[in-house]
Length: 441
Image (tube, rainbow, N blue to C red; front, side):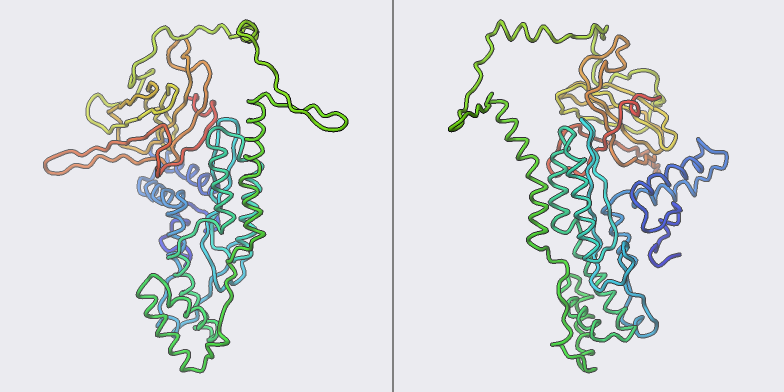
């Protein structure tokens, strides 16, 4: 097992620790189909659960960062008995004395579809600034064009990238201490002392205590504190920060000004000697009515009676009694159709309807791993099972494993609860999907 894969999670998915989020997702889907009892003759329940557990951690940027940084743990005693390799940047693969585990985000949008993809790993300061700039430029070009999340995610991601990305202080401090011991084991006492002095200010009391003791020992060994100092390579320059600030707000500012000017009917008529602002007079009500009549409405037969919230649309694989439950609160302005799909077969377990500003619940979901998809629209077609035209579709990013538990006195099932509107401090970021992905059976 690799030192950089302490629990073998990357090995379980057959990918290297440097794999991207897309590579991890692709590997999981491939291996899940090969090992799931419902989709493969070579099924292995133990391997399938191992793969699912690995994917649950590595598909979440925060959990993956915590797992990756946990690989770098050692003690001062180990540094005296064996040579330890210092940490290398995952991009340039060069030794970096002051590494950070950083998560940058790239935003991709198209009309109503927006997705935010993490780019993460252990970086040196130089490679981190390059990746932060690259991710922000990609977001600037590809992230704004989805409503409503495109602009929101783009501004947040560009500002985060510009100020060093998302990183945890505890993980950074653990790696600095690890490197102090690594350079100690290699006889580089000056660099080991400089990193130990940094580690004396860590939030981890055990590390701070050991670092203080190591620094004192190195001073006794002859290390000059005045010469053993390191500059902070992670300090953001004003020019770098200003560039990201402009990328975050220049485009929305220009769009807002354009929209304001259009809404006011303002134009310019420039002639010799100066300019003059004018506004077009509003259309009369009769003229407005004539303009509206020129927009053709397709004559598509629609559903005569809108389903109630929670009504199933078509056949389902729900149990008649027992099973797990799913609750959907639709706080959006449009009706919604919800689909529950089994992983990894993608089979539809149930499809049901939730009216705008209502809550619906279904029960009878059997044990298994599922993802929840949703689509918005207004009019249903004549079958009352599909929207005439989707206003948008998405899915919640993490598949959930539902497992019934049984004690001596009771049977315990689970209830999943999701909201279809923005929640302050919410912990789920939905993923956009195409209409074809939602509609396929």
